[in-house]
Each structure stands twice: as structure tokens, then as C-alpha cells.
Image (cartoon, rainbow, N blue to C red; front, side, top):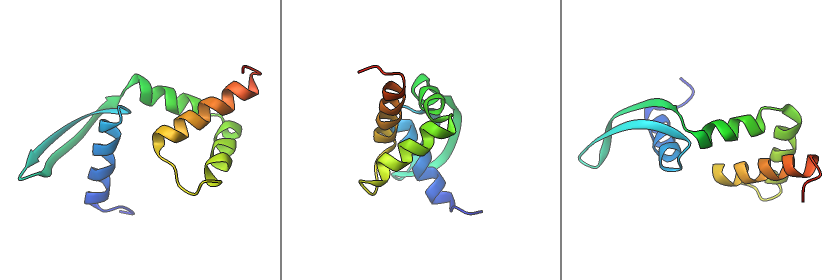
Length: 90
């Protein structure tokens, strides 16, 4: 109830376009008529695995906040960088 149907549909469509989820989207008159999420993709699982640790997620948000707003793909890149840095891999 916090988000409108349109906001949820928009987010699902964008996540599917970015390759984070597998979704079924049926369009009528250039508007989404039916939207259903099937599952996460490998990329979606990888992102969630990367930010699962609260320390990694906190540092990821801290880095992202310096810019103001970033895309989900950029958050994924930042999270990977945070993990790489913590492992001492350059």
C-alpha cells in the first residue's frame, strides 16, 4: 500500500529490462496490462549476494550517497568494488 500500482509496474519493467528479474509483461495500447515476476536472474542473485552483508551494504550506500542518486547497475558495481577492496584484490 506504500507504492501505487503504476510505481510497482514501472519498477518491475525496469528491473526486467536491466536483467535483474525474469518477468512477463503484456502490453495493451503501449501500457502494461499484465505484469508478473517469475524469478531472479543470475545477475539479480549476484546483486543480492553482494549486498547481503550489512557492512558491505552500508559502505555501498555511503559511497553512493556522495553522488546523490545512482542506478541499480551502479549500486551493483559499487558493491562489487567494496567486496573486492575488502578482500585486498586490486
